Image (cartoon, rainbow, N blue to C red; front, top):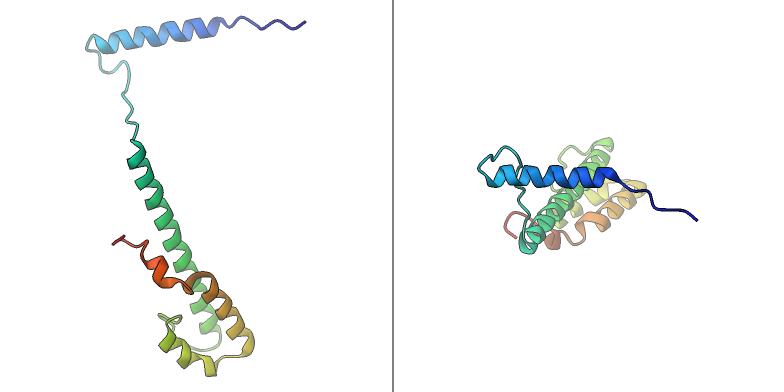
Length: 123
């Protein structure tokens, strides 16, 4: 019922590409640009680097969110607030709602903070 249309463009495109390739082979290196295709190992390394970078961004975002919540309560020394020593110092000063919010943030990003650190530059 339906016939497949004949695409003249495919023939023209393939001829054009073949001519470009021939010019490239005959020392006109501007005719085509070679493209580097990474190996599977290199691609895996790139994926891991992107993942590591994304985890670092997420951890930093959670850290800053917690600092903002602490600042809203008037706690001004907020660096490393998730570390156990500092957390124990802050706990008595904070209202229950803020404690719950910070505990939730700690659960998302900092419960396994040492695990996340392995994704850092030294990994």
